[in-house]
Length: 79
Image (spheres, rainbow, N blue to C red):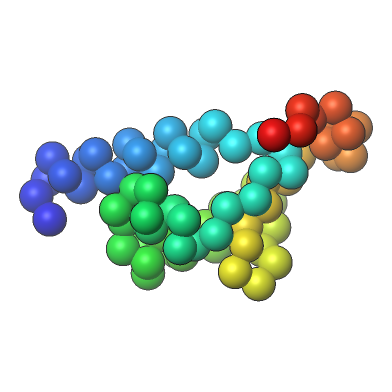
């Protein structure tokens, strides 16, 4: 993968994850399909976000969690 393509992949990943709100769910397969990132790299990033308490992992799904507790999740708009 060229350096430019690699940068574009990371930008797509950053944009996709940055747009997620508390309660939003994404799968590893979807991240790979939307960003073009390899599955191992994408899983490493998502697992790191789980360890940072920004996401929860439920099997193959990753859910964005609130930093403010349940109050923010209750106000999150339905999509």
